[in-house]
Length: 497
Image 1 (cartoon, rainbow, N blue to C red):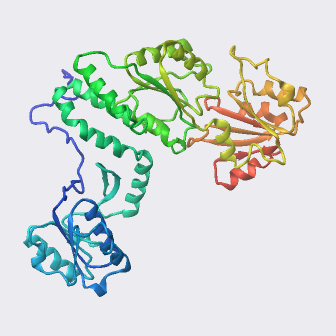
Image 2 (cartoon, rainbow, N blue to C red):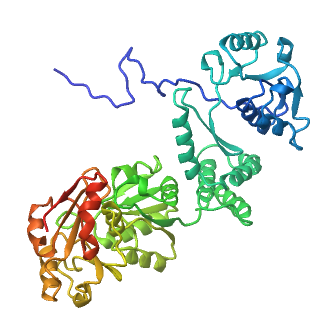
């Protein structure tokens, strides 16, 4: 038997090519209605909202409804001072003649008979129509809108789940900064000059990528247009564009919904993402599809990237003009070696910024439903590393202060040294009965929360899965951790004591 290997793009004779796009329930289109005639039949609140949309799109809207049937909302709309000339009210019901010269037609029909008649009249005049809340009589549908005009996003569920469409709109509204409208207008103003200056292909694409990079960073300022014109000149001359930059982003404990909006924007603007081993797949799914992803994680007892290798990689990519996102679990500025990486960038004059994340200690408190600074139990909070640079228990820690019963302490990376931590604290007279909370795989489906006494910590460590990341909380505030966690229905495991 001879086995023939083919590349994914190759096909045998007669073999059908895969579809480039999955089936669509509707085709999204955008209509230019500026200065065009639109008709609206009906005077209810729903018709008033559709009228506002049509007017906002620049249409000249003719409303057909007896005055006594106008809702209060519609009456207020008709009285709006800046709409005369774009909004014309006809104190009568619609007739077939109303469709003449119309670009679109919308009706708020009381029953199916009126809806069918409106549809027939619109089809007879060659006018696309929408009958509100009656999809069977529509030839087009209104989607949910995110307005950053001239950037406009339309969302449709084909009438199946309008509430879902609204929820999607809210998500997109949060991700797209309001200032994108200003950038879109600037793009429209520059487009012809860019097209004339830069031919189609790599150079033109490089300019617009630089434009988009700025657009998601901040609102346009007074020097942006000039800087972009200069960038177009450099690209036209074949010169290397400006150096790239690095954005340190906190990925949080694992749950993608705990990311900040600014973190998601950075992920979606990245050229390259250098991510830690503990960053979840759900977080990475929010990144720009075209971004190159490179794992640079460091885990105890496993093959890992060295810190100087990570530093060198960041510098090389940034010098090549890339926007590098250094994606770190939790908060990048807490036990993430960000200080060393920032020092290397500063020495080379590479620009950077930081997007904070939810650190594991805070995530643990939220998961357990406890306050780390409950005023009845704690006067201070400490985040302490559970191992030194050389891997053992850190010796340069003020253990007497940590053993203070009025403090709450959260140990990071303490899985291998937990027994030594417990022994050291009890040597400094911390009570053996002191509550301890353990959080494994925080923010992930396999999350496990447990509670024990300080004296029982070594035995508990012998029972756990060493592959899972661990956070240890010690202090009186964790006395109620078991009740709080179970009360929220989390996969918590409670122990006696």
